[in-house]
Image 1 (cartoon, rainbow, N blue to C red):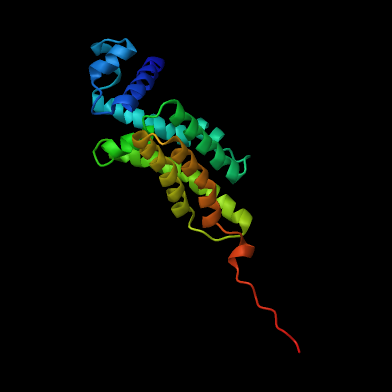
Image 2: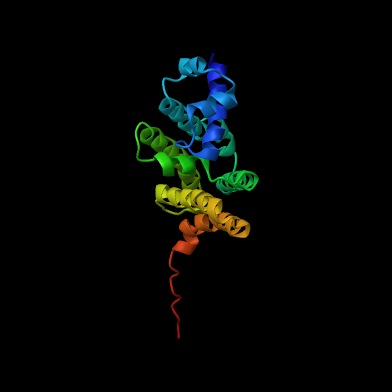
Length: 204
């Protein structure tokens, strides 16, 4: 039973990614999932409940085993960021319809019952970025608002995905993703760089 429900969620998520939530009907989901209406309503009381389930799966990706692997503590903070940037870049080049989380946030971010689970999903992503920024700052002996830097990184990566969906500018998208490492370095200067140099006293 759980496997069938999960199967419907995964197939529906792909349809929603391509058509938007409002542009996806229950009939679209039934057709692609190969289930009857009665079977669908056995697992979901409504289309909205399915939408919440799709968003919850995105949150689980960031907060669960997939996120643990992508942002593994055994990797350096820079490698974690590079791996995530590469993952996003590969997915967008393969199927450029925007970013799944970004699309849903733009369409449903202020609408219940979707707003709260979307906030949880975004928070799960920011938690991953905040952790790597905090560790990076600790290594460099710097003091930084890690959550603010995490938001800047998320805005750069996922904002670029939205722009790329519209302008299809391959080189602009790739250059923007490459900037993420610079954003991290610029936001978290090494302690030696952050401290002002004490001028030498000249003796006559």
